[in-house]
Image 1 (cartoon, rainbow, N blue to C red):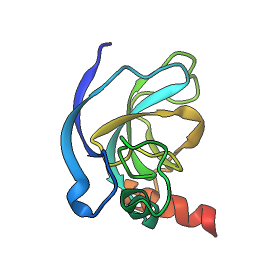
Image 2 (tube, one colour):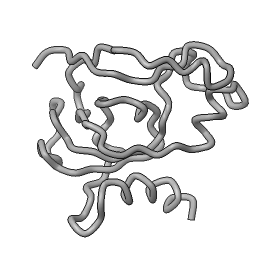
Image 3 (cartoon, rainbow, N blue to C red):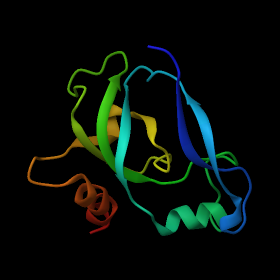
Image 4 (cartoon, one colour):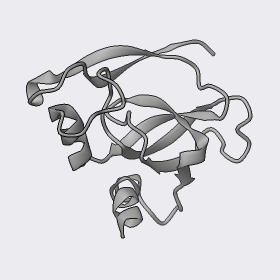
Length: 131
């Protein structure tokens, strides 16, 4: 499996909404302990705005915002055994969801039960942890 070209919103400097840049980015294969997720729903949170404006320092000045979301697993990295391609999953507390696809540590994702939609799963992850 090689690199994948996908699209993402990228922030390279702090500021207003005008610093959000829609770009084609290269996504390498998932690394050890990671999965690739094709997003079907993402959350928009105050933390994303705080990183963009500089109110909170972001993990880097080149960041794809979005700390939560849900989607379908499309690829597995080495050592991932409890998740399968095609699983519906959700996650929180990991920047990068403002993208079509992304790699994420398998340790921060949860499988979505059939009775819950991906949109609901993406919306409840940070709120559930906060509660």
